[in-house]
Length: 140
Image 1 (cartoon, rainbow, N blue to C red):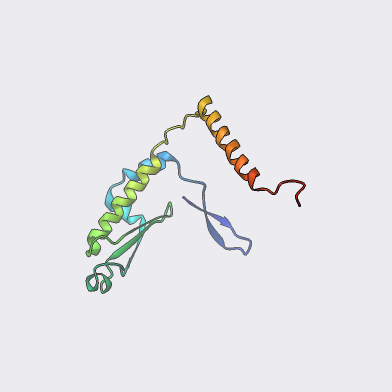
Image 2: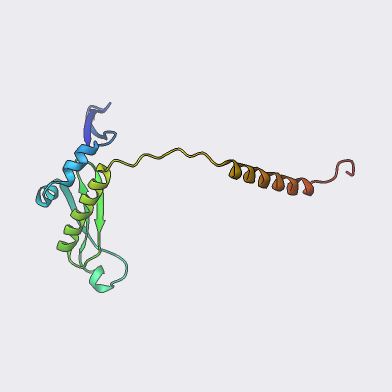
Protein backbone atom coordinates (compact mmCIF):
# COMPACT_ATOMS: atom_id res chain seq x y z
CA UNK A 1 0.00 0.00 0.00
CA UNK A 2 1.19 3.52 -0.67
CA UNK A 3 1.16 6.32 1.82
CA UNK A 4 2.33 9.87 1.29
CA UNK A 5 4.59 11.67 3.70
CA UNK A 6 5.64 15.27 3.74
CA UNK A 7 9.02 15.55 2.10
CA UNK A 8 11.53 18.12 3.38
CA UNK A 9 11.14 20.19 0.20
CA UNK A 10 7.41 20.62 0.82
CA UNK A 11 6.05 18.13 -1.72
CA UNK A 12 4.39 14.84 -0.94
CA UNK A 13 6.50 11.76 -1.64
CA UNK A 14 4.94 8.31 -1.86
CA UNK A 15 6.46 5.71 0.43
CA UNK A 16 5.79 2.00 0.75
CA UNK A 17 4.15 0.82 3.93
CA UNK A 18 5.68 -2.35 5.40
CA UNK A 19 3.32 -4.76 3.66
CA UNK A 20 -0.35 -5.17 3.12
CA UNK A 21 -1.92 -7.66 5.47
CA UNK A 22 -2.81 -11.17 4.42
CA UNK A 23 -6.50 -10.27 4.69
CA UNK A 24 -6.02 -7.40 2.23
CA UNK A 25 -4.27 -9.69 -0.24
CA UNK A 26 -7.05 -12.26 0.13
CA UNK A 27 -9.62 -9.54 -0.59
CA UNK A 28 -7.65 -8.43 -3.67
CA UNK A 29 -7.43 -12.02 -4.94
CA UNK A 30 -11.23 -12.28 -4.81
CA UNK A 31 -11.89 -9.07 -6.78
CA UNK A 32 -13.57 -9.35 -10.19
CA UNK A 33 -11.13 -9.06 -13.10
CA UNK A 34 -12.60 -5.81 -14.45
CA UNK A 35 -12.25 -4.08 -11.08
CA UNK A 36 -8.73 -5.41 -10.66
CA UNK A 37 -7.83 -4.09 -14.11
CA UNK A 38 -9.14 -0.62 -13.18
CA UNK A 39 -6.68 -0.53 -10.26
CA UNK A 40 -3.74 -1.26 -12.57
CA UNK A 41 -1.55 0.84 -14.81
CA UNK A 42 -1.03 -1.03 -18.08
CA UNK A 43 1.93 -0.61 -20.45
CA UNK A 44 2.32 -2.35 -23.79
CA UNK A 45 5.80 -2.85 -25.26
CA UNK A 46 7.70 -4.84 -27.88
CA UNK A 47 8.38 -8.35 -26.69
CA UNK A 48 11.80 -9.76 -27.49
CA UNK A 49 13.10 -13.26 -27.89
CA UNK A 50 12.05 -16.09 -30.18
CA UNK A 51 9.27 -15.37 -32.63
CA UNK A 52 11.00 -12.98 -34.98
CA UNK A 53 8.89 -10.55 -36.92
CA UNK A 54 5.62 -11.53 -35.25
CA UNK A 55 7.03 -10.58 -31.85
CA UNK A 56 9.24 -7.64 -32.72
CA UNK A 57 6.83 -5.52 -34.79
CA UNK A 58 3.80 -5.34 -32.52
CA UNK A 59 3.39 -3.99 -28.99
CA UNK A 60 2.01 -7.28 -27.77
CA UNK A 61 3.81 -7.70 -24.44
CA UNK A 62 2.05 -6.26 -21.39
CA UNK A 63 3.42 -4.92 -18.10
CA UNK A 64 0.82 -4.37 -15.39
CA UNK A 65 1.46 -2.47 -12.16
CA UNK A 66 -1.12 -2.77 -9.39
CA UNK A 67 -1.01 0.82 -8.15
CA UNK A 68 -2.23 0.31 -4.55
CA UNK A 69 0.36 -2.40 -3.77
CA UNK A 70 3.09 -1.66 -6.32
CA UNK A 71 3.22 -5.27 -7.54
CA UNK A 72 4.37 -5.57 -11.16
CA UNK A 73 3.74 -8.52 -13.49
CA UNK A 74 4.85 -8.96 -17.10
CA UNK A 75 3.37 -11.24 -19.72
CA UNK A 76 4.65 -11.82 -23.25
CA UNK A 77 3.62 -15.43 -23.82
CA UNK A 78 1.10 -14.72 -26.56
CA UNK A 79 1.23 -12.64 -29.76
CA UNK A 80 -2.11 -11.13 -28.75
CA UNK A 81 -2.03 -8.11 -26.45
CA UNK A 82 -5.59 -8.88 -25.29
CA UNK A 83 -4.61 -12.42 -24.25
CA UNK A 84 -1.47 -11.10 -22.53
CA UNK A 85 -3.61 -8.65 -20.53
CA UNK A 86 -5.80 -11.51 -19.33
CA UNK A 87 -2.72 -13.58 -18.44
CA UNK A 88 -1.30 -10.61 -16.49
CA UNK A 89 -4.50 -10.37 -14.47
CA UNK A 90 -4.31 -14.09 -13.75
CA UNK A 91 -0.67 -13.70 -12.61
CA UNK A 92 -1.68 -10.81 -10.34
CA UNK A 93 -4.41 -12.93 -8.78
CA UNK A 94 -1.93 -15.78 -8.22
CA UNK A 95 0.51 -13.37 -6.57
CA UNK A 96 -2.22 -11.99 -4.28
CA UNK A 97 -3.27 -15.53 -3.35
CA UNK A 98 0.36 -16.48 -2.66
CA UNK A 99 0.84 -13.48 -0.39
CA UNK A 100 -2.47 -14.13 1.39
CA UNK A 101 -1.46 -17.66 2.33
CA UNK A 102 -0.06 -18.15 5.82
CA UNK A 103 3.36 -19.80 5.59
CA UNK A 104 3.73 -23.15 7.30
CA UNK A 105 5.79 -22.81 10.48
CA UNK A 106 9.20 -24.37 10.41
CA UNK A 107 9.99 -26.92 13.07
CA UNK A 108 13.35 -26.67 14.72
CA UNK A 109 15.39 -29.83 14.30
CA UNK A 110 18.45 -30.96 16.19
CA UNK A 111 21.21 -32.94 14.47
CA UNK A 112 21.56 -36.50 15.66
CA UNK A 113 24.54 -37.47 17.80
CA UNK A 114 25.82 -39.70 15.01
CA UNK A 115 25.78 -36.86 12.47
CA UNK A 116 27.57 -34.52 14.91
CA UNK A 117 30.24 -37.20 15.57
CA UNK A 118 30.66 -37.85 11.84
CA UNK A 119 31.05 -34.12 11.09
CA UNK A 120 33.63 -33.69 13.85
CA UNK A 121 35.62 -36.70 12.60
CA UNK A 122 35.66 -35.22 9.09
CA UNK A 123 36.87 -31.88 10.46
CA UNK A 124 39.61 -33.62 12.43
CA UNK A 125 40.76 -35.55 9.36
CA UNK A 126 40.82 -32.35 7.29
CA UNK A 127 42.84 -30.50 9.94
CA UNK A 128 45.32 -33.39 10.00
CA UNK A 129 45.77 -33.09 6.19
CA UNK A 130 46.42 -29.37 6.51
CA UNK A 131 48.80 -29.93 9.41
CA UNK A 132 50.85 -32.33 7.29
CA UNK A 133 51.34 -29.60 4.66
CA UNK A 134 53.13 -27.30 7.08
CA UNK A 135 56.91 -27.30 7.22
CA UNK A 136 58.37 -29.32 10.07
CA UNK A 137 59.37 -27.16 13.02
CA UNK A 138 63.09 -26.79 13.52
CA UNK A 139 64.05 -27.47 9.87
CA UNK A 140 63.77 -23.88 8.73
